Length: 315
Image 1 (tube, one colour):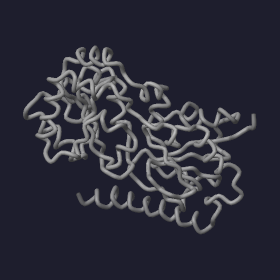
Image 2 (cartoon, rainbow, N blue to C red):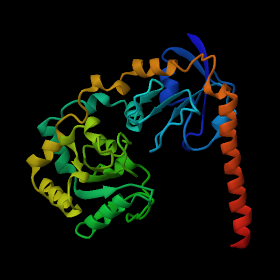
Image 3 (cartoon, rainbow, N blue to C red):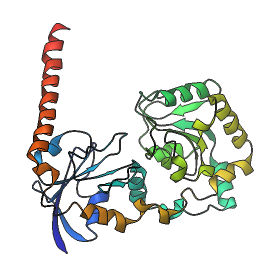
């Protein structure tokens, strides 16, 4: 195998450099090593350490933000962008790859198994979130909670005695799981709708207006299609009291037309990433662009200094 040095910067806390989607994918074809002088850098949106690297840069984002193509050679995000330097790779794909359960998500669940699973769920609805800035989600939680008990197992609005240690283990006992994204944007689909599927619960989804392109619309409740939260609660109650209706949500494949979704074809993802290997003139080598982003970093530093030492002094 050919040698390939890579590195990662500005990813989320807990990210493991030598055991992740990109490292493992490239390892199918290359002898991959982590090196601080890499051939290719993968970077995300939680910092600006990528500015220290002059090699080819590949941007990956799990957040609702656009790729800056003056800072990267290639980008992989959730966005529906028609650009030969961009590849759509939603965050939930990485979760499916880690769980290695795509075959389960693309298969039908038997009526017998669906009924067994549904009858084993003794609790009504829950959510597990830490971000308190998603107003639509908070709204829904408060509205539904005024009529029925909704358990919150995350750090935000926790009402079960503290944050749960294992999210999937917690939500598996619930018929419905609030699966609202932090924000709404076309194509922006995270793991939130996926996790209820892992435990055969029904997601109450809000977010990506094109969610039907990613997941089978007959397997979740799309809250954005209702006029009020009360209407959503009415449907949830109907499903709760009608086993046939419930299993009609549980039985169908959660993901359809996999062959038409390039992001599930590892050979296509790998081919795209390889476009960023061995570039003679990566964007980081541009004097103008390098100056532009170094200036951005300097502005951030000045702003931070002002807030910390000047504003704080007069508080």
